[in-house]
Length: 429
Length: 117
Image 1: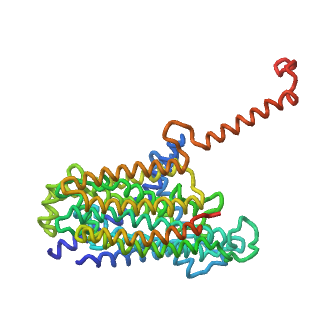
Image 2: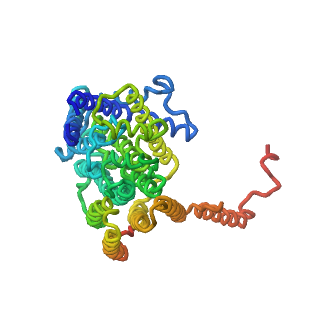
Image 3: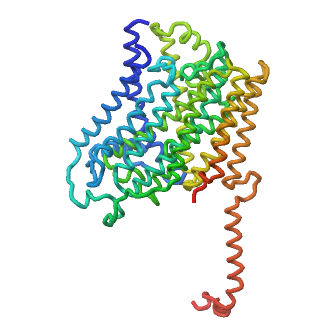
């Protein structure tokens, strides 16, 4: 560990984070508009730059040049501080994520706890925005958002227990870890076992909670335009509004990145494999990197970003697919479906890991978890009324019955009301 | 450099960034306030009464439940880390802990904490 290496490490990482954070929101806004447009048979932005690529850059410039309006009734200090409280933790949370062995600013031993703590700071920012605006829409939006975010934080945290438990079973010492770096390594050595194969239910529940935590569709009730104008954002404008906006996109990136680290094997992938791990991570973490190591790091970074952007693509996909939930459905889904399932997942995983003898432990755990996942999906689809057997969903059936009933009524009613058959329109012409 | 220093530096940078961005818009943006613009948004009509009124008790119940379950999750984390070391004893502790919580959970469920009207 020489001091020159430390400085290079720090500066390179800092530059990478600044580049990633500043470009991610721009890329994602563009991607979201373009992908959703094509999913809805539209073209999307196309005027600025080739394929409209510069559209979101122009948007950012526009936001920077906007007037900052503060309505006369606001609680000044709360109102002004709220966007900062929302945005600063998002930036901070990037620090302990291992993007590749070299691009890891801080291999903090308690990374998972710090991540959860930082993500719950967002709730405070949202509530301050709702309260400080002194506006009915903003207050209702803020309250709703707070209730939603704290409700979904529990299954989120509980879903992360699975990978943590697994680290204690795959490591040699028998002690698990909540450091993101260690969790990545646990999925890599001595052989590849991404925790998504052992905890698919955990990933599913974590991802659903991630959608709710970032206030994305179908959980975007706090910003439900048709009923609440813009929720807690109603009174915000210009760059203060943009900070919430950027924070939301940063949050999406972090949720995807944490899912990648915990379930999808972090930076591991074809090319960034076990030999690489032995040479760079175990052998000499503080040494000067050779050209081969730099190439390996680039490959690792590439795989990490590919996984992250696939997960972010699913964010967009879900948004253009699913309708928004109702407030009571939202709360009941968190408390009555997600929390029991996560608790059952923890208990079953722990029991299996302890009970099944050694060579089969992980196999049995993984298979049972896949069965649980199938059960979970079946449960949800029954709850929301989608039917797997090719039958029509209940609401479609109801609509068809209604239409049939209306048709029957009008069939009885028409002979008296309709015009006589003897003078059809064609004949009159 | 140890593992906590970059986090502190990043926190400082994040706060500095938010301040900088706000300052930049203050300098670059136009300033043209008038009474109509500064009125709180209420779909175009005058605000009749202050917005801070009573809100549904459900939010409070949710908040209290959150605290209980959050502490639960925080105390499950060390158990999960040490699950292999603790072995069957740890599993029994886990089951007991979750069972006690489930009793409270079922109680508030039967009391109707999760039914919204």
